[in-house]
Image (cartoon, rainbow, N blue to C red; front, side):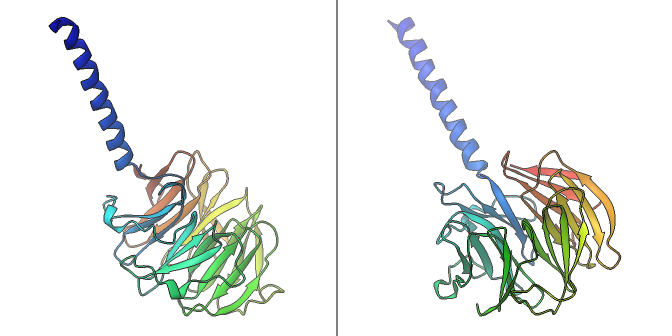
Length: 283
């Protein structure tokens, strides 16, 4: 009897340990289709996690040492997030693709239900905040809308072609998509007729993500996985790195010299130096 019972008990034990290991792996690897990325003033990384929280999505937060801060995860009012941005006060903006709104949270992740932005928004695919704390939204890959820090609608623009990414710097705004990227001079008024003074430049492939560094230059990621550094004054392009996937989000930490690239296809975020050296993979 004992010889018959022992294998059965052992099998149950193995299965229990296996189930525990799976649960632990899931708990330690919550990234599910990571999209847009953002950094706060302390170097914490915010991730628009499209597929988490029972498919509604979530905003995950990682410490400067790339450790998940589970207690800071945002799920309230999050609905298939594609982008996340943080203003100078630490407020968090989330682009919700399913509900079609931009939700706002304080620096602790508390939802400000009275500050939701919805006017003229359709299937938001990304959100960024500029140096004036104005909020820029990429709507359904077709047009851009801009709002004041108080949620007031300021205008819109249709640069032309599919829009995959937007980024802001002190002097420029950048729109990427199709086989071009467009530089938009700061301070221009958005209208339905576009932005005065805009210039378009050729890209090797579809521009899918962009991010400025504190020097005023910007990194642009292409569908091929190539990331280049561009001087907006000369539009000179310098190769930085290449990955084997089309990035779905990018952010630059100029203080530490890091580039973060999200990959929704294998649920990871790769971290590089701004010189293109791989540091680690968050998964």
